[in-house]
Length: 340
Length: 111
Image: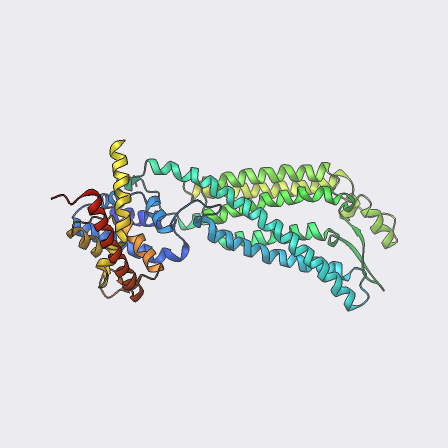
């Protein structure tokens, strides 16, 4: 179907879509009805074509702006719904990792319930406050950047808008599931929270009379403060990618580029982190062995490879495969269903 | 350039009076496009893309209330002044009269 043969109903639907997608969610349904009736009325009363009516109504972006009382925002109404929503999800996720971190610290060296509660409260509160601030900060910066960037994106179509050049309403198959993005974001934040606040969870524990004691952690905790910012950076990149998907809600060029760039950045960062930053606790194998009263692991055990390059290589390869699959799926869906 | 400036000055001038125009006609319930035509008849032209958002804003400010009429083929949203809207409208009219008197003395009453 060429753009010229665009029938009038399609043109109306596209115009209405272009307006409503730019107004807050709760106004969309009403404005859609209102506009459809208005366009019909104008066509009948003023005896002209749909194209002329739409020309008269003007650029849908401008129209939508009037519905919004626009001015300058750090995070404007276009993004505000998504922003508050992601912050809420983020706080929920931080809450979970704070509880995990509180429990682990509470159990460490707790003889009585009182000790446990004290450890739990102290660590939990620290995790909630610092984790919450970091998360809100990261999300706000991401959205502020998007808001700022969007201005440029929106200016371009303004100059050559015409009713027959309205973009098509997206194919259902090109839509990206919000639930998937939300689950990914929650998972990323919880995982980051645990890595930052209670990395010892990834290790071996022993139950003693003094409560549960961490014997050995797979990570190099002595240098953890140096490693953590890097870890947070990688996950921030992943969250950025998910937020882009959430906002655009469909496969398109921006989502595709974001996916390629973010995956490339996280892959390279993960490679550096795993190969050159001494992330692993080299003593871990010996500490576990001595605890088990053995001297060596068999070749079938994953710990046999501990401390060697093979282990890091396996993880890097795994991450590389995941990144490649993710990018391949995104590129495929963008070209198959997405708007170009 | 000069024409653009005049255009923008005019639209600014109109914008100020628009709310009064709209409120004046909504003592009875009307839907958006009927209001456009109604104002047109009386020599006041207003674009639908200005009026529709404006109606919504006035409703949010509780000067207008609205009701969907879905009995006919096309669903329409009817707007009407609220009691609060009446009060504000009267106040605005009084102010307008005072202002136009002032304007007359400033720029004269051309015949």
